[in-house]
Structure formats: C-alpha cells, structure tokens
Length: 501
Ligand SMILES: Nc1ncnc2c1ncn2[C@@H]1O[C@H](COP(=O)(O)OP(=O)(O)OP(=O)(O)O)[C@@H](O)[C@H]1O
Ligand SMILES: [Mg+2]
Image (cartoon, rainbow, N blue to C red):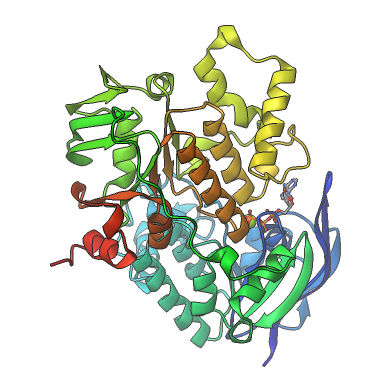
C-alpha cells in the first residue's frame, strides 16, 4: 500500500512545553488511522502543525510523495487536506450553507452565487445523510449538528486526506453510526482518514491502524486488530494496566431517604423546551438524566440552573420554595452547572487557568469577600493536583491547554464553589481513558461527601456505572425512571428509544 501522508521527525515546542518531540506519522490511502494518547499527548498539535495552524519547529512533511509545508489551514485544504478541528471553528452567526462553503464560495466579480452555495451545501449534507436546513443560522443548531456541518464542510473540498479531531465527542449513538458509514465509504473511495478519539470502542469498530503518542513522543504504530485493548491502554498511559482496574467502578450506594431533597421541582416546565416534570434530588445520590440527543436533557438542566425561565411549576432547595431565574441566583442557592459546551458557555480562553478556575467561586462569595492572591494560588494548586490538570503553570492562558484539560478546568471551577447540587452535562466529553476514570472516582467522592449530582451523558455504560437511578427523557418529556436494582444498559436503552414493552 502507498503512503499518502508521511511525517518525519516533527518537533514543536511551546513556552514550557515540548508538545511534539521527533514524531513520525504515516497514513495510507484507503485507511482509517487512529491517533491516540492521553489529554495533552500532542494529538491536536500534530494536526495543527500539519495543517499550518502553527509552524513546526522541525520535521519533514510529504503528501503523495511530494514535500509540503502548508502555511495555513486554507493552504492545506488546497493541497487536499481537510480538517475538522476539536473545537468547531465555524461562524455561529452565518448560515449552514455559508459555513460549508466559507472561503470557497462560488461567484463572480464579488457577487456570491447563492443558488450554487445552497446547492453545494445540500450536496455535502446529503453525503452525510443529514437533514438540516441550509439557511438556518449555525449557532441555532445543537453542538452535534454543528459538528456535522463542520464535517460537511470538509467533504465540500476535494480532500485526499480527511482529519477528524474528536468528531464524535458530542454525537449520539445513531449519529456515530452514520458518521462511521460515511468514513467507511470515503475510505473505499481511497481517502486517508485520521481519526482522533478517546472512545476505545470506536477505535476497534472503525480503524485499520493506529499511532499512539505520549508526552509529545511517538510510542508506536500498530495494526488495530492485532493490539489487545489492555495493551493499548497501557501504551497510552505508559504503565501496565490490569483488567480489574478497568472493570466497572463500585456501584452507587442508595441515598439517605430520611433527609429532605436538596433540590425538588413540581410541574416545572417551559413550553417548547421541556414538558412539566417532577424531580427530586437527595444529598449523596447521583441521578442520571438519560435520553437521546435532543430529548431535552440539556434543556432540563438549563431550566434548573436559571439559564432559561420556567413558565410553569415550582422549585425548592433544601425544602424552601424559591425562584431561580438567573444562574447567579442558582449559584447563590448552591447549584452548579458544568455545561457540555465549554466554548460558548464555559471558558474564557484568554484568561489564565487560575482565573478560569476561580471565577464562579468568586461570584458566589461576592466582591466583598474576595480571596487573597495566596488563597487563590492555594485553591488553584489543590484543584490542579486533584484533577491532574496538565498545565505548565496556573498563569497559562486556558486556551493553551489541550481540549481535555480545558474540560477539567471547567469541572474544577464548579467544584470550587462547593455546591450542594452539581449538574454535570457530558463531563467526560473529550477526556482520555485515564482521566475518565479519575472523574468517575471524583463523582463517587462527591456523592460520599453528600452532594446531589445530576449526571447527563450520552454514554449509556457511563450512566449505568455512575448513577444510583436514572430519569429518562424522550421527546422533551420525562417518561420514566429506572431505580437502583433495575438499572441495566439494555433497560435504559429501550426506555430511551421508546422500544420497551
Ligand atoms: N497554543 C499553545 N500554546 C501553548 N501550549 C500549547 C498550545 N497548544 C497546545 N499546547 C500544549 O501542548 C501539549 C499538547 O497539547 P495537544 O492539544 O496537542 O494535546 P491533545 O493530545 O490534543 O490532548 P486532548 O486529548 O486533551 O485534546 C499540551 O501540554 C498543551 O498544553
Ligand atoms: Mg486535542
């Protein structure tokens, strides 16, 4: 088989970090090649130096045998390298069609040919079998659909190499299956595909070969089918891993039913978002919110946290009726919401890790009781260690951290408010296997400390592992609950899909 892409001796340093150290990487035409490694291993950086987002410090790049050195993502696209980056970098205020053709719009003499733009966008979406209005504003779509639009944009170019940096992190099972179908089709057409993911099931389902990075260096290249899963995890983490270590975590223990619920709603709802629902969360329990993408999970969380206003029902905290009509009020009452959309609702990219970490905590204490610098540094050091956030130091701008480490900063921010109730919306999205396990342990710790946790995740196994019971949403309505003893992946899946008898 021919090597489509050949990288030799690639190096890249950032202040205080060797992001890539003498890395070799090859991708063949007609293969799906996984690029794997822990958070901060250098996966995204390798892609960015290849596609001209940053210059490499050293190394050789060849595409189809010819030496290349694209100076920008645009130049890389012209060479036939299309990329969907980890952080969707499209323009939310433009339409779907504009985003798909951005920078390559057909037209003459400065006049855009709108019919051609829409036609091309529809064609690209049709290849993904995605039913989506090309005139819709991108920002109005769910994160998952925005991601699909980013992939459609990549398909609109005549790519020879398609790079997908964690494209499935926010897709549900059905959408992942659709994407895999497309990837296999493109592979059959002779494309080389680089696939970055933290989901090992997906690695084994769809990739032919894989390359593992650790601390910026290449650990090795393997045929996927020939590499047992535990060995793969061991290579990524750089240590031996036992099967027991990766088996299910301890099952959640039942909460104290004598205590009043920390958070309770009665008939809480919002027209067009979620039908009125009753819910009660006790301290010391982890309650799952199950449902397919678009079932209303995030809308429910937004309502509880005062990001959207309810138009019916009541809510009480520690038994006292209250109104939560702003996130500020929610935080004052001891609620925390770790959002799935870390870019739009979460992190302030130019502020430091310390500032990002302490911002919500500061909000809760109020301006009068500001932390001293020394207190801030101590608190920050505590969370950096507890969550093993990989950063050269607390003053680094958060945008310089790898995607998974940014997610950890967001989680730390909310833990620092010492909430009574924490809503975790896809908390392990984009987080590597080792860190996922750490976060699961952390959730178990929160439960033991008496917090009420509302846990939203698209990964059914994760829900079953972490939760003591699960509320199931379907079509924006709370349709059922699975209690402790009955919680199995099968049962949950059927309730979510509405296929139980
Ligand atoms: N623009 C930047 N400035 C400074 N440091 C950076 C920058 N981009 C990445 N780094 C650092 O380089 C290292 C590799 O980061 P990279 O984003 O490539 O990791 P990754 O393997 O993609 O991780 P993840 O799985 O979390 O996405 C990290 O230590 C990160 O903090
Ligand atoms: Mg990355």
